[in-house]
Every structure is written in structure tokens, then in C-alpha cells.
Amino acid sequence: MLDSIKNLLFDLDGTLVDSSGTISASLEYALDRMGSGPLSGVSVQSLIGRPLLDIFQREFAMDAKQATEAIELYREHYDGLGREGTSVYADVPEVLAALSLAGYRLYVATVKPTSIAEKVLVDFQLRDHFSGVAGASMGPERRDKASIIAHALERYKLDAGHSLMVGDRRQDIDGARENGLPAIGVTYGFGSREELDSARPAGIVERSSEIATLLLAD
Picture 1: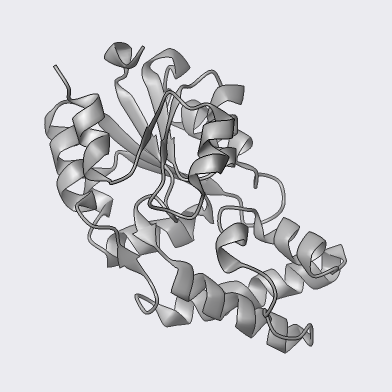
Picture 2 (picture 1 turned 60 degrees about the horizontal axis):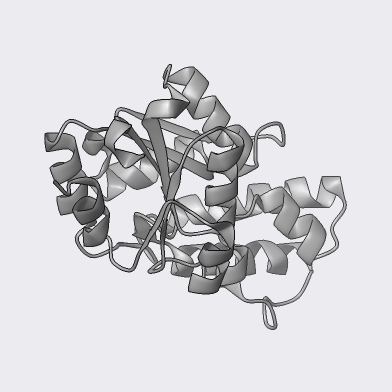
């Protein structure tokens, strides 16, 4: 199945970068400004990869107007933090370079808005590895992973039969399947091994270097 793959779609948070510190600080800031109290009792890792609108509405009981305001506060703080609280996972730059050299075309498909994802990739010197970046819309129109992957396929004219998703959460695997793509799950991110096993991806790796090993195997 993997022999026919030409295009690789990568999740961002939990797959390319560990952004848990930045996300946690930004959530705390937004909740504080909204008067919703501290983040205590909620696992940040369980939230990463989910649309912000869903997080604020479902986890913190905000209505649509409050959630929209909270998202603006979150993004304001996130943008101000820059590189603080985020780091690139070990071996990711080398893996991306090896895959590009082997002829794969690389893309990012993330629940982050495209403009914010672009900035993260530029800040961490990863942008040059990718042929395109597909993210969530700034509004609520395109926010779940399935619709983001569909957007990536349409925007960059990618054949689902020759494309594969790489991500750390069940929604990455399920979103890929809804669009006819196989997927590889990575356990070094924010999703558990059990979560990924239950999603039944085409493969599971424990380190980023194993992505290249799996795809470049003779």
C-alpha cells in the first residue's frame, strides 16, 4: 500500500513540533481573561489537536460568542510568545530532508489556521521542506481534521490514492480515512498508543526517524 505514496501530509502539533508549553500558556491566558478560571483539572495534551471552538465550548461551557472571543485572546497570546514553549521534535528536520530527497512531496495539514502554521514553520526553519500548508479557517467553517485534509487535497490537486497522512491523534487517522488516505500514527506526540491502535492506522512509529525508515524501506 505504501509503495504508491507520492504525497505526505504531516500534522503539526505533536508530530513536527512539541507546542504543549505555548498552547498551555495561551489557553491559561484566554481563560483568565474570560474569567473562566485556571486550566487545572484539564489535561492540555488531551486538548491538543482539537479545534479551539470545540475546546472552549465543550470543555469550558462557553457559548459561540464567548468562544470566539476566547479564540481571539488565545491567538493574540500565542502569537506574542513566538518560539517560547515550542520545540522541534528530535530528528524531524533530517527526516523531512531525507523524504524530500527521495522524491516525496511534503505538505502540512493542521487544525491551526494556515497563517499561524506558516509562521511556526518559518520560525523553526521547517517551511522550506513543504510544498504547501493547509490549515483551519480563521472562522468556524473549516476546523475538523477531515475537512482540513479534504482542503489540502483540493487546494494542491493531490490524488488521495497516492497520499498519506502522518499524525499523533485519532482524528488524524480518522480524518485521513474519511478522505481515502492511509495514515501513520506517531506515539511520541500527544496521543497514546492505545488511542492510535484503536484507530487502526497503516503503521505506528515511536520516533520520528522511524517515519523515514518505514517509507524508505527497500
